[in-house]
Amino acid sequence: MNAISLVPLPVVIPLLTAGLTLALWKVPKLQRLLAVTALIAMVVVGVLLVIGADRGALVMHVGGWQAPLGIALVADRLSALMLTVSAFVLLCVLLYSLGQDIADGTAEAPITIYYPTYLVLAAGVSNAFLAGDLFNLYVGFEILLVASYVLLTLGGTGERIRAGAIYVVVALASSIVFLAALAVTYAATGTVNLAQLAQRLGQIDPGVALAIQLLLLLAFGIKAAIFPLSAWLPDSYPTAPAPVTAVFAGLLTKVGVYAIMRTQTLLFPDGRLDTMLMILALLTMVLGILGAVAQSDIKRLLSFTLVSHIGYLLFGIALSSQLGVAGSVFYIVHHITVQTSLFLVVGLIERRGGTTNLDKLGGLAKASPGLAILFFIPALALAGIPPLSGFLGKLGLLQAGVAAGTPIAMVLVVGSVVTSLLTLYALVKAWNKAFWQAPTIELPTERVPRTMVVPTGLLLTFVVAITFAAGPLYDYAGRTAQELIHRDTYVASVLTGGA
Image (cartoon, one colour):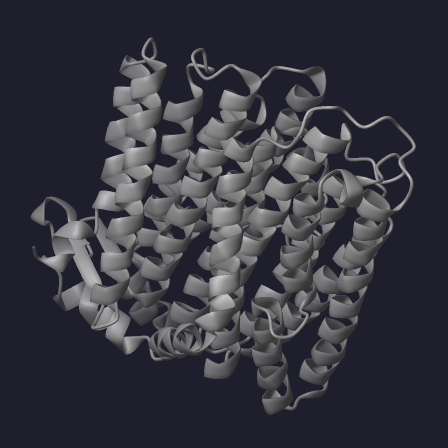
């Protein structure tokens, strides 16, 4: 099979399966089987795309219309890697939610729209990663918005509706800014194709190009939850069901980070806003982790660490060096899996301890030693304890910062070390309170369901595997960064290659 023919499958498979599962809403067993099969197929396709894209970008011109007129779907090293990791995370979280349904005895009567909506979300994520033009990227974000709003408000409690309303207002504001950026871009350059924009943006008025860059950064910065555009996140994510919170925390902000990485390296290689991005990265890291330290609820604590560690990803992008971008590519893989794992474990903690309030939790180490291990490993990885993947990712970013050698880069290096220490402090505090302090409330008698532990363990195994495969993964990240920095290969592949 021609590898290019695989490119649209990560979008087509979940969309078609979403339609089938919606039609089969009266047959829950078949719904589950189809949803799991579709996500397994996405993982397999993702792996094949990683192998194919490592030999050169794979470009599919939809309908046979060549770029820039037609819609181009592009699987280069970065997008193929993001597709694979996101598909695996989506699969693990779906298995977790199935396990939760089985444990709750609701497996035969699940919420009808859950599986179709979840698959539409998967399609939106894939479409954003494969988009070869800004408008298709916008479409991917809109698909995400619609699906995520439905998932966020499942259950219909007042708290969830309120959180969902905040999320939708913020997401719509981001979409409006993105739409304005699209209009200005097309008016100024006559195209929204990324490859063609890479050629034309340097030929227009520098002030207009800067305005486009700022508008795109504002739109993507809201989605990525970069300070000061992150205030919405800690109030929105913790109210959703555990599987939904986990997949949102792991994936959705990373789609925004991906868009920033793609546009900054491809469209704006002059680095005019690098200093501003470094300052934003520093503020995101430090203020985010200070927010985490102040929390007494473990869900909100993790939400603030999520915001804080977006700063690490922005750090590597802002350096605009091959070393820095490679560090961000490695760190994004680590952070997607670790953050999702932690939120899945918190779902288990809430089930076993009856609450996520750290002032009430306690005694879980004795009641459920396995749960303690499930929390301990990803917590150490997130904090950056050697030799886990978080340490390796941060080490790469620190080396890139030192290599840059500028005063602001050195301040970022110091800030990232301080953030790492405060992350360790916040997670150790949560660990001690949840597992070792005397319980202040009576623990529920229900044990942690194995059907939910197994998918969590599967994702945790992947987190540990990143450490063992760090060498090959860092090599791949280096080649990805080289491809992003030397954008001519991408431009030539889209404008002259493909099917």
